[in-house]
Image 1 (cartoon, one colour):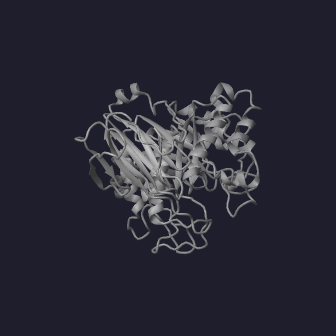
Image 2 (cartoon, rainbow, N blue to C red):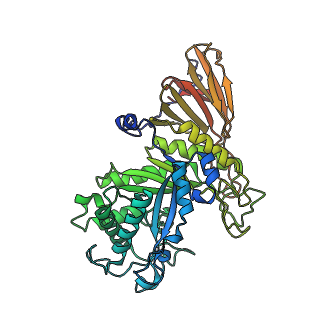
Image 3 (cartoon, helix red, strand yellow):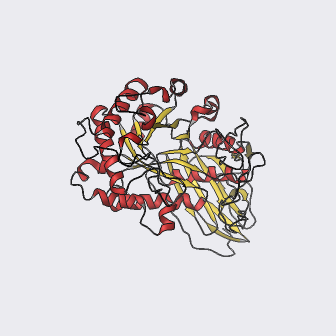
Length: 475
């Protein structure tokens, strides 16, 4: 191998499989790990996308707006659930918002009356509601995954909106009661912690909410014997490519510290808000993100999540319902007028190309990232530049006669043939990844460079990178 300069090999790779091979073989198919939030708005497009699951909010205050004797199931139209069932799309429920009548503060999302009572006491209003909703939707609609609230780290007085009007000890009680109540009536119930906004604690200089939640649990002698009363840690990540890996690893580190490293991790919200879309203007954006960068981020976030052993992954959100230009944020893969953003095609490409992954590794240098996705009979290489310098990737080829397939972020396939490289032995697929574009508002790289996707037969191969004539082995 020709080397103008050999830069030290730096490799980070998690080697555990993404799921049990035995379970996979028994089911005869791969789990539907890729989902989208609120697919019910556009069910036909959700099928076109290939989403395997969706998240729906089950708001307590709407089920029981006036008293605990009510149970208004019409707030979740059966059409949504029928469409999901017919499409083979799993529904994940998110439980939130205490009714105003059920707490002293009369605020939505406040800790309710009776939280310290037995889950069998009807005056434990939260336990009674959880049991009722879990029985009804578990038996009738096969819904067994329940997320307990959303972003409880958003606190009253610190932002224009909040999700939970209580402290971390109150939230621990909400989770514990929900866990005990749900599993009492449904042995298949799976309880998820809420996804955290995360950045609010960073800005405030506090320990992450997840860590404070687990510290609160240590005061409960029943916590260890019950897995701290949750099954899944949920993660929300937005905008920056680097944030994806950083936040997931911080979550894993916190779980490991408390002996909970076997807990599953789901990313149930992620996206990069496309603030540069002429059809959907955004007022005073934090970052200037193009439609192309939204697509790039979706590929990067999905690949990095697989490498970090995330069990499920979802984009927030499918559709811009009730979009008001200049007032609400257009996160959707589908605009309010029904037109598709490029990100829709990108996520469809991710689902089609990444779904059969059984093992994923991340390798990186200061200037480049490579994620290898090992699949039956082939490997997918996802490669991009981390900063503004373009990067040339060289993927080893067994001979000059074989071919590989490059897939664009919008799903267009191109057949590639290997080439010889001057002064270098063997044959190589040579791929040029463009440098990242700095964000014009922060003058920083937010979304890293547009990724290259290569599909080649067999297991992972040697990969070398070249920047400004300097070459080093990345894998």
